[in-house]
Amino acid sequence: SAFGDYRYFDNEPAGVAHRNSLAGGLAFKLVEQDRQSLVADTGIGYLNEQRIGSADISTATWEAGALYKLKLSATSDLSNEARLLTSFDNGDDWRAVNAFALTAKITSLFSLKFSNVVRYSHFPPAGFETTDTTTSIALVASSFLAGVGFAVAPPLLVAAEEGRQSQLLAFVLPLALRAGLRALDGHRRSDAF
Image: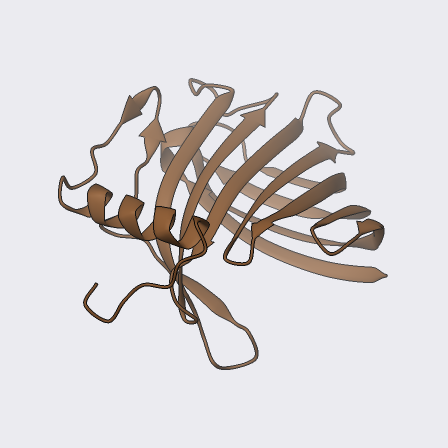
């Protein structure tokens, strides 16, 4: 099937003031089973990146990616998405992203999501590292309107920047782990929770 994609990204610790990208292409369902699925896509697009301390980038791009999902139980699943984006203007300007996530349903409205994202830029802004990682735990609420979802991250966010990791609030982690483990085990939370 055909797809269109717009993305906005900003990450000042990685030297990106803001990035806008627009792409279109084709996506293919390679595996579609009850417990697992695998989708691959490829497309072309345009990227405009405003950099901190380096020349900005404005270029046509080519990208490809794959998304694997595995249903672990009725209330939990994991996913892994890998993406590659290359510039038509500069062969050294390519980026790769790998995003791993484990999601556990707590109620019909809320889920707990643990994710780890590794971003690699072969042509980073001057003075910045090639690899950037973000690890997060988020409470995800599903909206009643057309399946639109949003994440409520603070104060559950754990961000790793340049090898330093911020601390979770001591009372939040045990509560989040308890809820997540109960959901992974297939239990529903009690009203007294």
